[in-house]
Image (tube, rainbow over all chains, first blue to last red; front, side):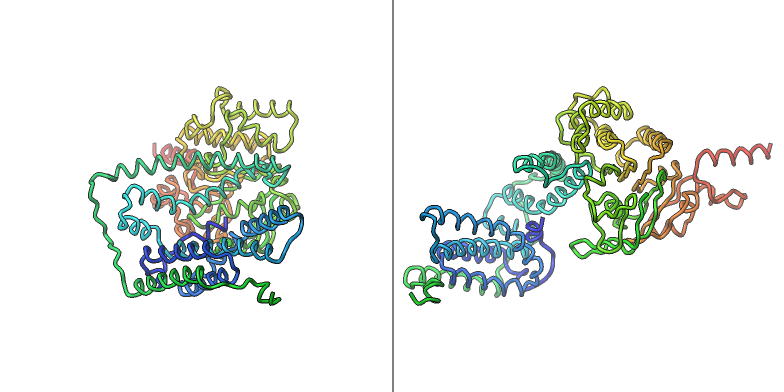
Length: 263
Length: 273
């Protein structure tokens, strides 16, 4: 469940935590966009390194590394699939370029996972809901989204308890053929789904008994305002975006093999 | 026989939940583990069937260390009934639910049938054989969960909060059931907050606080010790409370059982006549 740990928000105060979630989200989107734009290792590595100062400033390095470790399995899978597909499509041979593009694909995924992880680690679900609301997303949707985010760790914990309960009844998750292994998840998934549905019905009743949706126009206790730091991040984000687009069209980026072998 | 020696357990989140627990539970014993929330009760019993492995120290079940075997192997001897039945029920019928563990342990088809009948009879579930467990009431679901563990007849039974959400009659049934298990020389370990229920059963009591055992002894001694109980945020059982408040009349201080109380009161009242 380490992937979920990487998304768990803990309330602390740091320059990054205090930033406006809208600007932070814009920054993440810029990184996302740039990562999609390039498939050169150097650029992707730069994008990855750019996330690190944020992690250090926010003091979430432990959680961040844990989430990357959680993403490592998927990253490895992406690498293998890329290598395998280029190996089989190019007549059972591999060139340095193909290996590089497989690494780039993997790196791209890691950049995305890393930057989204920082975002979720440093943004409270409440702030996120507030940001959605003030960006004129209907309140129902904003609420559904923040509730979903908030219940991820709860669900992960529950899945662990259910697995324990079934193991105590002799279920061996890792035993059997591939198909059997998938079937082994049924005794875990059904209680998980059933209790989630039960919980959502209870939640709906609890909300309605506290007059959810009673008035059309809601007021908020907190309002998001842009501070100096937010403006700074906004400018940095826009500059990254411009630089990314400019580099993409006007600069040729050498591949690693070109740098190493000069070809 | 459950042997625990200097058991430490640290969760991945760096919380030290158990700080050096040592204890022995002999075959056929009935033990209640009590203490406030977060004292480490459930963490401790999860070590008994290997769901958690010690960070330091060891747990031995019938002289085999839990680190040297699998949960499935340990579960054959140790049945663990979880607090919330909704965390384990998943089958279409009660019968299939009870059969799940039996099939996991590889019992033969005839044996499975016999054991299902036996367990359903024992817990009064026979009329629900083909009912979906999700359609049953909370108390009934709890009984199905219990039946699904009892079915393979483990030597030791661990019950995590068995009385939560049960009405008085169901609690009395549970008590009768525990007494029945006792006569069959089963070991029973019960994690609970329900001080009245423990007072009625009068088992050996383990009191836990902050990952340590602060008291271990007879129910009559521990559940009447105001100082210990306050430390664990437990109130005295009602009988003990009355007897302690009336101590000036020469009433004994170590009474928690309603029948003992009755006999003592009869003696006093007879004398007055």
